[in-house]
Length: 521
Image (cartoon, rainbow, N blue to C red):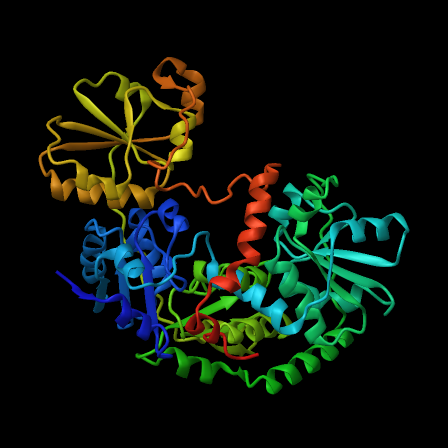
């Protein structure tokens, strides 16, 4: 049994400026219903894999919590098995946090979303609403609309006349695109955070043009009964020339010096990585992965996304982050400027790409998957006395499934005490989830015979008699589904309104410690 800590003790740890990882081991649907502000989601269904990705230093303080149902203890056991040493559990789980008088936050990426609102509040970031922008377009005003989201999101829906340029690329490319200082620049995203961060980054970078964040992004646009575009492919594929890159490089270096962010060489990077008492993350923040597969330990996360959803990629508060790009330093520098304000120790790596391989980065090994005996549907349909568990995401299970199959999440295994049938079939489409649940089944029920059917849409069409395609209504029993205003991008105005109200209300819900954590304004 791991050591339990009170909510008050953990709350003090979150403000002591030392490294800590505060982990919600419940599934994502449970996490989005309500969790402590600085907690990250590492669902038990994929726990060991995500832990190795998000916590590179196995000596870091790790606090786990659940619904006081024993899942945190199961997760703690697995964490220790793969080498993590300082594991603690929140006493009485989520109820312990509430009973101490602390707030729970619904939604995802809460610190990053709150940070966006804090940026707007601190800087008074200029904004323009959808109707004002629409009228400017009708009047053919000199303006350009830059969508700061990744292209995949832009393609789904976009403001008419906009161009996709992911956030960290905007300061790098803008001077090559906009030559007239009277041209107004509007930055948008789907909601608020990337609009605000993208616009304020340009202002901080010193552009002479008027810059605005589009208030409430594409959601605000359709809430104003304006038509969105779908399927557009307007991507800003432009590169500054060498002379322009020199100017940009000089400007970003000046900003980094002013904000006390160090530009480091290979030796300093290796020194940082070698610190045994620190968690070090390293990211290539270019939109198009510049390092290809030469150095697989360096994750490619575009800078805008790294700021917008930091807790998806960095699992340790107060950790150190090394950023690099293609040598311009603009994209890594802009990202570092924001991440420092999120209270990380940030560094910009300035080395030639051929030198990157000399980094002494000891990447954690991936969790080793177990082998599985795979069945074809022909083999499966001839078997008797079988029990079929579908471990895919519940949203997919609810759309179609093998007949007589039951949806199963890893954490629900605790509800099964006696599997008398010898043949258990696991239906899956994710080898990570499969490996973990298969391991647990083998330990709990060593006598059962486990086989695997890997989901195949072709089988569903070919052998329709073996599949059930009747729609199952999603409900809260499907704990791996995020119900938090999930219809906001599907034309549901009520969900969009709720989501925007949620974003703008975050600051008022934060306590003094949470607000003061973001120090560098």
